[in-house]
Length: 368
Image (cartoon, rainbow, N blue to C red; front, side, top):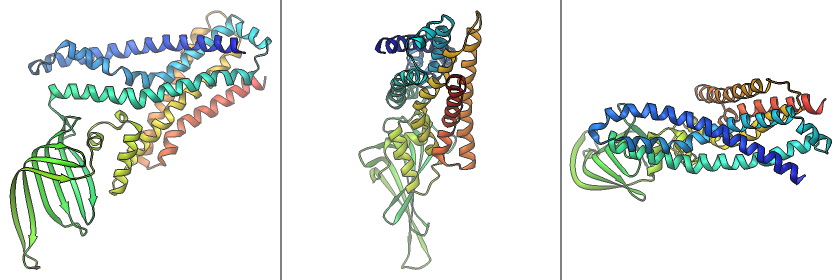
């Protein structure tokens, strides 16, 4: 059995690697063509060809994360169809490879792909994306969100704060920061603005800050306006650089743990966290899709292929992988609009395809 396992695992790994390299080369080529347009647009800021090549290279982990499940499906279909066409799998079945043993064998390799996908998506891809964004920000300026910037909220004892950040360099430096302070009744108490700010450990350092406060006069209805200038002003806060980046960057660029912390921060401050909850659960369930792809590919080993049919089966695998990706995105957008349960929204595509795969395995393998 060890020899059979080594044979199947080796063939699948080689086929998946070949498909993954092919897709990766195609995606990186498109990225490079798209990035070449920035060479002329950012040439005055010093953006050169080696910067574009480095930026494209830093997108490699993200593409690996996106392409690994579909590459597992196509590569495994190719291996199973080839073994069936050459009657090698028939010989393995004659030698005692029962359907459940075959399923268990490919699932063992599937957990390796699951682990690899999780590590790439949770560590390599976010780090590489952050480095690419930081490098690009040196030439484009800073990260911005629309015309108004990013908004964050925080509760501190009896005070509420609404924070606006117009731009961020994805490290610690911010520009055009405004902090609005409210009491429990929602009345505005102060507005602090600063052209530049830095994020420290549990505190923000505001440079050239202007603090505008509103105070009642003698406990009466009259308000007094006061403006104070500060060369530097510290503001204690639990809003970290990762939280600011989460408000500026797309949530799919974040690590699972950072998504969870930001999601909890939004919930604690009575903000809508639906989008980030769905993305969090997608990151949890997405690596498991490699197992689904392997189960979908296994029945192809029990079919009888004629000459020329293998290309059609591989093309069918491509369509199945694309449909899985489209269904996953569809559920994500629909769940965000309809306020569906986040974990169910993220898990639904995998559950649907798992049911289809297990039914196909039962119908084509066990039932026959």
